[in-house]
Image (spheres, rainbow, N blue to C red):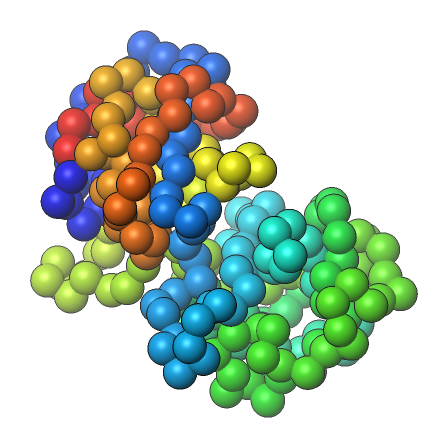
Length: 241
């Protein structure tokens, strides 16, 4: 349970498994943390900022922006959304800001449309610290959900840089399909594609590594057998951390 990334644990080898997606493992991190919003602020005191995530990513690495407010994930309207705003999104999820750009009418979201008329200078550390119309105050449809492309197709969520490895980086990890109790499906990126992790022999020690990998506290981390719901490759099986 002391590893910094999930792929640094022992496992059967990429895509070597005897599982179905019904066996996709889930993990619950402390306080329902799902990572992706970078390191702690400190300056603000308690409460933290709203979470932010990049989802529904296309082959070019551009993704829909979703923000968490009042316990629910929702989208951001593209009205007046600028590349300076996109830089803030990339910074918020822990990605490089260089070359960040926004995509009008990325679309595809569901649930509340939380933010509209967002106006950032580009130097803010989180998107909700920019000016906007107020939570859920908008005149948009989900066809206007904004997308963002961060440098190198980065989608955040894998915590701070390692350094020791000297380049190449680790496989990305993300927590998606989260339930009301804050438990989510584990997905790992390998060879340019996101896939799932099989629940065979998956332990709470493995769950601690998942939470650490995405930048969440490890205390009380636990795994959920047969969380399910994933698609695409099943990348990892018989994970032992």
